[in-house]
Amino acid sequence: MSRRIALAGFLAIVVAAVAAAWIWFPWVFSANYTIRVATGPLGGDAHKFVAAFKRELSEQRPRVRLLLEETANLQESGEALENGKVDLAVVRSDHPAAANGGTILIIRPVSVLIMVDAQSSVKSVSELSGKKLALLEGTPANDPLLRTVIDAYGLRASDLVSTPLADVGAALQAKRVAAVLAMGSTGPGPVADAVKAIVRATRKPPTFLDIDEAKAITARSPVYEETEIPAGGFLATPAVPDDSVSTVSVSVRLVARNSMLDYVAGEMTRLLMVTRAKLAATVPGVGGMSAPDTDKKQGVLPVHPGTAAYLDGTQESLFDQAMTQLFNFSIIGGILGSLGVWLSSQWRRHRPDETQRKLQRLPAMLVEAKTVPADRLDDLEEELDALSAWFLERFAREQIDPDRIGGLSTTISEVRQAIRRRRTRP
Image 1 (cartoon, helix red, strand yellow):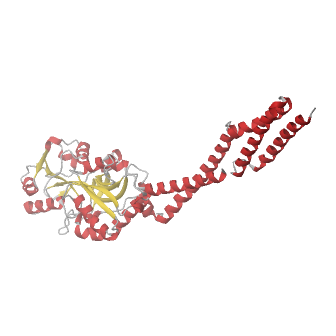
Image 2: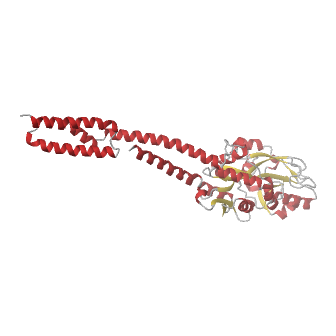
Image 3: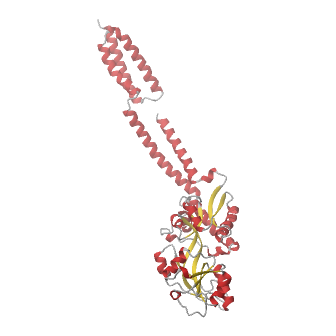
């Protein structure tokens, strides 16, 4: 019986180890390991970035396949991640998916920029209250970060005038608008194009206004960050802006589901950081790509544990993880096996099984051998022979402990002697 229990325990551990490998290391059983990524709209910066990384990944990790899922916007990408339709998604930091998942990489910051004509008397954003403002075409008027900024200064959404890129310079020069609002990153992009359009129209670079409420905004909404745009961030010659500018930004992030394995998340982070230079050559917007701050992994925007382990230099190898899981399962299996043996012994001890019933029959037969009529002694002896054969067979199968067989033999001998004495009695 003990051998069967040990074998059953060993098989249970093997099955559990295979099941764990299937859950934690599925690529072991598959020719390819597929990761679904929500990228945003086709042709967008996020889609270009992920597509470029997909090409690099196919060269270095042929078994890992990125399956790109196009979405209408980053809002839909975040929803797809939260609904479990994808494993990775490019989302903004102000979407709930960024707080509910784990950040793998910060692709770029997107800042709110406010520009006025170089000759304008406006020196602060608060002076723009009640004035018409050009909103660079392509920037949604209901953007959460933009609305947060204009609400902080008491500006009215009705004063925002959607203006094509080609017309922003002329609108500013003709004073049809007091300022231009745009959202973007440093380097090539919509803000740099707007700066060039203003320079062509006014012959002078625009003046950028500091968002003095940036600290208060980020304190109320920790998903945003206070950012400083360096001098020359949008145009090198002449330097535009000519001095650093304080503003507030939202970060575009590559976020993974929390269920993604730590090893996979860490390896994705490693490959992204290694191939950053190549990606920047083909996708200019990738120049602002950076690793997340692991000191903030317990904040509102957590870093994926696998990414944090890689960045902190504590990432375990695949072999180490497998050995750790095997060690855990061996401990759990040993505990479960011991518990199973104890339960089995308790069950056998308290269950009135066939062996127990036959054992209880022997004392009764000893009493009957002394009291039954003489004509029933033959039947009693035949029953005793059958019981002796039954106990001997169970002993040979190791279903009766050797310690008990000695007591059985003594009891059976006493019953036989009692029958013999009855027969020889006058």
